[in-house]
Structures are given as C-alpha cells and as structure tokens.
Image 1 (tube, one colour):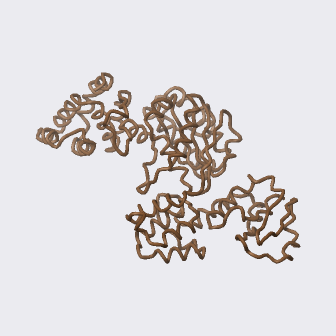
Image 2 (tube, rainbow, N blue to C red):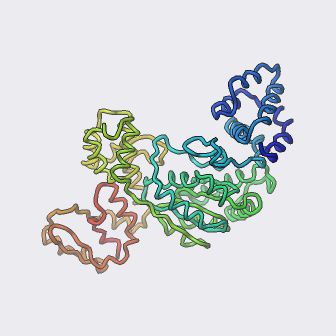
Image 3 (cartoon, one colour):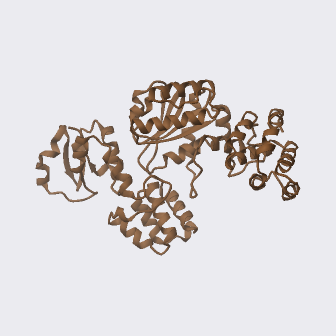
Length: 454
C-alpha cells in the first residue's frame, strides 16, 4: 500500500473503528476480490463492533492499494460518506496494467472517481462505439488543463449521455487531464428556480465539509461565484459534465473558466459563452450490424439466430439507438411479437412503442415531440405544415403551383418522381426538424422543409 494511503488510514483509524459496521462493507470487499471468506470469519468472531472494525482495518493495512480503494468505495456505497471523505486524500492511483482491472478493463481508481462524481453506470445493454468515444476523448485531451467546452450534439436518443459517460471511463484520461475528478450534472429543461436548485446541489457536493459556507447560495449569481471559487481552490483540474442542456442562458451560470463537457440537441447553445470550444457531432445511425447486436443482447440470442423480422425492424428504425432499444426492451418482455412491432413501425404507430426505462421518455412520439415543442412559435407553425414525400412518389404538376413552395426563394422541381431542393443556403436552421423526421423513417434528403426559410 502506498505510504500516503497507509498514513491516511492510520490517521483516521480511531474514527473508523468507532463508527463502521463491518458486515456489509466486507461483502463489498469480498465481491471485489480483495478480502477472503476466511478473513471475514476472523473479523466476525470478534466480540464487539469496534473490535470487528479494528480487525478489518488491521487487515487492510497489510494489503495493497486495491484494498484501500475497495474499502473507500464500500464506505461510499453503505452511506458512510463522511468517513469516506476522510480517506479521499489518500486515494492511490492503480495502474491500468496492474492486473487488478475489473468491469472490462476499468480500474478501481476510475470506478472510484466516477462513483464520487455521480457519473451514470453503463446501461445493462451496451454496445461499444469506439470511433465516437475516441473522438470525444481527443477533444477532452485538447483542453490540456485549460478552461474550455467540449460539446456532444445530436438528435434525441442517439446515445449522447451514454457516450459522454463512456469517454471519461478511461484511466489515462482521468489521471492525465482531470486528476481533480469529474462531476456529473443532469441539467435538462429548466427555469430559473430549477437551475438554482441544480447549482445549489452541485455546490453542496463540491463542499461537503462546508469549508467555504454553511449557507446555500440564494440566487444564480451567488451560486455561479461559489462554484467558481470551489472549482478553483478545492477541485482544480476537474471536469464538469452537463448532460442534456437546452438553453444558452443556462450555460452562462457555468461560464466561470471551468473544463466542461456537455451534451445537447442544439450545438449553438455554446455561442454565448467564452473560451475554446470543440464539437463532436453524433451520427444518428448505428448501422445494421450494431442494431442487430443490440437486439440480440436484449433477447439473449445470437445475431445469426434472430428471425427475419429483425433485419426489417433495423431497416425501419433507420439505425436510431432510441428506437432499436425501445423495440429490443419490448421484445425481451414479449418475445413472440416480432411481426407485431415491425407492423407498428411500418404503420408509424409510435404511441404503441412504449417502454419504461432509464431514458427520459417512455415512448418514441414523446422524444420527437419535445424537440418540436421547443421550436419558436413561428417555426412550430411552419412545422405543422411540413410536407414529407418519400422517394419515387409521383407528384402532380399542379402541386408546383402552390404558393407555399416558393417562400423565401426556395424553388422545387420534379425529376423522375423525386423532389430536388435548390438554393438551400440555411440548412442548419432545419437541423432539429430534419433529424426528427429521420427518426420516423423518412430519408432526410427527401424531406421538404420549405417553411423554415421565410
């Protein structure tokens, strides 16, 4: 065990022996492989609670760094956060090549940092997307210890939050760029009172010893100042992760020279903040192989054993992670309904594709409608008049005479049954709508979005 970790454990030995109950803590350490059943029995035969705690700590002192980290994690998980805080300064670094890795190569050090920072665990059904994870990590390395913003943006349900969490699940990245740790904040759509509550909770997490103030910030400006001081003096070189940001004004509360990773549906949310900015666009399609892999994991079958409907379902889903996951979760509960759910997709019966999960929306139509609801009133009005034509649909010539098709200089023509848009200069304005349409099964380059460019 590192001298720093050993000294920290000895320094707080008395407080630990006085307060901890060993049974559940030992269960955690046994599951991590740092304590044996025989050692557990030696602890249990002691007469009193304090004697059992003293025996356990003596055993830990004779073990390696992994035992210290496992003991620290056990304290966190069993509600001894005040005692865990005493040991935090002594946390050793465990090399990823030490052979003590667990959970698919994730070291105990990484698991400790992510647990402390509130970073979500991997979903039960998880497939790797190494190219995107590497892209996010490369942008984070570019921060190089300096304030800045890394933005992951993409349509609803494309896996932004999962990949943000996966990107920081890396030992060398945390050790090299963010030795101060990571801190996850689920932002979402907020008003001012909701944002203040998020900031108060974050400040409380960052100052558990209440060394700066025992009183919570009373307004957003005070919370912003408190956060700036805490990040500068108590958590330097740490990463703040803001998940699901909707509004630019929300980011201004965090614009205090921090290193920030954020997920959003709208990459323009960072236009109003200062500092270097890096963006990682999320591809909306998983691809056929990844889609089939997700379905196979949900239904516990090999990919080659999936029924023929599986390939058609992936085609109808257009590779959307959200849709594939919803269908997979439903098929896990109803394994004989492949044809039924395929038919619902083909008929666009999205309200019937519903399943409770960790995702914010239980149904496909909810995830799509939230983007529409957030449009400006005039844009939302245009969206209700949106026309979508599939490939090779024959369109009568008189349709071309409709005045709406010439709004804003957009001119459409019919060629071999396919619409072609000309003078499409402001494509970024139609991003949310075109992405929403791609979810429901229309190829985005056949979407006519003439109303947006007034």
